[in-house]
Image (cartoon, rainbow, N blue to C red; front, side):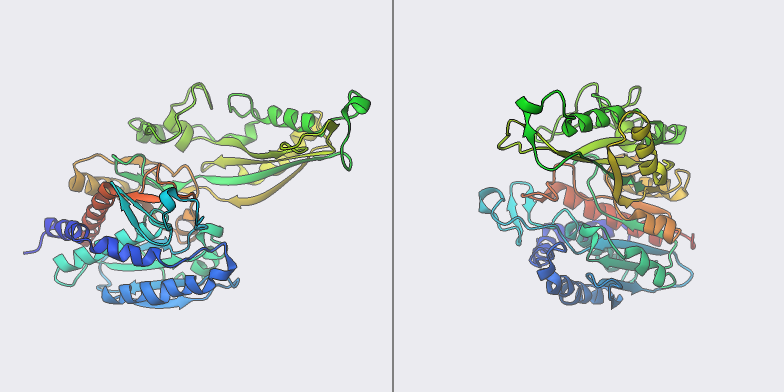
Length: 461
């Protein structure tokens, strides 16, 4: 009689045989750069040539959905076994950021996987081809253990525009709401808390870009002839920013801050330690909101970051007062923040406090979302991972970065459980992107255990 242990062993064997890395190498070979208009054919080919046959082997029915805005296509895969059993929806993205050819260590080719030590290099290994490949392989392991059955129904949606902000994912999901109907959402993206500790996160922080522009005059003016009598836009801009966030990264304007952290969130983060490895940036001392742990600052609080500043020519500075200065700030925020009011509030505050010359505008807004911390699916997933690994997973109320979680949690009304398979030092979005072999093997077993346990769930919901 098949057991949970059989499913986990199947997943481990798939990794140890080398088959998983062969599959991943084929997928990495598709140059699916969504920012590059010349790669539209590769985006489509990844879905049609690679994923559709792979899903067919798992007995999924698939179809392509065209982007309503003319961007990359979507793949919906559907496996129906028993209407009385639970249905899980999962997600992945086949697009990647720029390959950055020529910038990788030792001249590595980003479009093929290369194993060095315990690292597997290649564009998309961590974000996100490796992660949805793990989940697909885990489904296969469970089907093999159950004699061709999963014990539940499963649906996938794979997009090809996540790296350009998922511009029409919500529209596609709304248009195919019935087709994507499920009881639970489980997917994988982003990093774990650390390479050593399995992690669950329930949503993501949102983001608002805030543009500050001080345009006083055309060109520069000699600093000797005009210094002291002309307003300096760079000085004005620096002072305006300092009125919003101090030299310790602490926000001064209340509208930028979230509601108080709940006891439930504090309890979930109580055993979460932010501990960078030797090759990761080390935490700054005395930075950020006072009275919070590092985990609370990262996962339960808001931050206002200066992303870029410009005035004059830093490479060839002239002895001149610049005519303009510009900055782009970003508010990363958690659920409950009054983020729709931020741009107007910042503008009003600056204009009323000595900076009427600062123009304030907003771009690239994305929402914060998270599953209710009281959802029974959280303990279910944590117990499953603990059973497989013997480790208590970190349960994060939300990912520090951003993902289109709100499309599924708010748009489709699903409890969302994210189980990431990379780690903070994976170099996603940079040269030398990689996954770790030990984490990948463990992730395959974790997902096989989760999917087996879902098949043991007695009824829908």
